[in-house]
Amino acid sequence: MRPKATLLTIAALSSMALLGGCSDQKSGTPTPTSAPSPTGLPSNGAPAVANPIANTARYESDPCATIPTADIESIGGQVERSEQENMTMGKACAWIFSKGANTVSAGLVAGNKDGLSSLYAQNATGGLTTFKPVEPVAGYPAVVYANGGEGPGTCTLAIGVRDDLVYTIIPRLGSDHPSYSDPCGLAAKVGAAGIKNLKGA
Image (cartoon, rainbow, N blue to C red; front, side, top):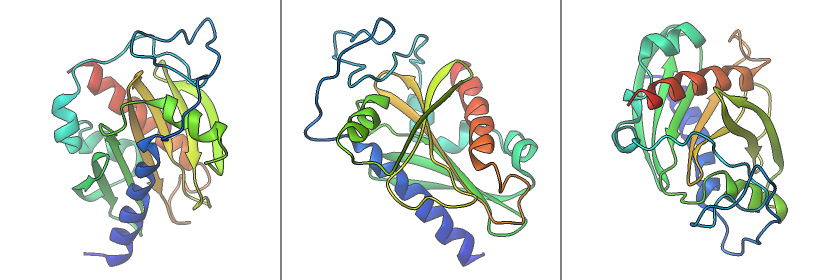
């Protein structure tokens, strides 16, 4: 056991709580690519998910099954162990790398029923310190965000897999990790692996 790695994992997973949505969301003006569905999503200018992934229940309850450990190792290096983390907004899997205090966590944030729209709403009200829509991951819209805690080796990437559901990836890397200077690049690769398996469910 390495206490430092465990603390990094807990800190990373706490970022997922930001996706709980806002109590005072304001309706945005929809664009042609973000027309609201009958549920009112997407909203606040968030992009629509063109090919929503419906069958996610298994991976919501068993996040470590979403990506085989071998796939994580091909992206980030040898994994010492993985462990499930139970959070208020959903379950996540933390993969702890063998070398140094390096982790990557990922999970479907099932408790957030507004998907990416919740982040767009929080950004509109000044609730985030980082908000950056990025290139789609495996064809799915994505945002890098934070509410404090930014720093080298860290990134929080949310990918919209449905208008009402996001898959969030959070690497926490030390300077000894090859992806230390590009944690969001590693997050995108992990996200693409997750999307591939979610679509095959």
